Length: 251
Image (cartoon, rainbow, N blue to C red):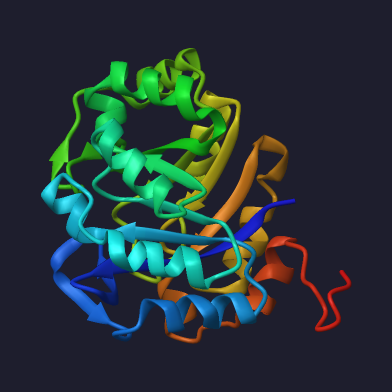
């Protein structure tokens, strides 16, 4: 069944959300990422998605201390992306306690590095498929790649990637609903696990996304809708079909 994954986007040590990835469209939601992470975990989340926004723009990991604090303090796996351009970056975040690393720009621009990472860390490596109007984007979503989406996904399959995170950049942070047509397209082309991200704003969005489970939908990343209290974590988990634990620990 698909998994609900709350998002924590880090910028200058704070929890923020950007609109369509634009650095000038920032809303801050607190200065304590650990407190926010524990809030989602106490509400039932079984994994967190952490993005180093400073790293995404700078091209190297920048928020390693905050990431390590989250990994130590939250008793759930951390899935992390942003600024992972080298094997040294991957080593640093795995040493900090990250369970799964999502590579974006480097996966498109340095396939040899991706191949080495897959050989070394296997299923702990995923790839970000960030798309704007049908074209993959890289470098903090600032540049468009020439690689057609179908070609990119075929290359990822050939290298042995088992999981991609699919984001429609034009929907991210907008609360206008996800692009499930894109998610379905990526799922069909890739043929392996897909995590959907971008635009989720209602429980109905999650219910509709759940219908893609047979195509390989593994999870849904939700950020702004939780911060804006459009729904609660447990409501979202039930809508997507995720396992919700009772206070006593029984499913």
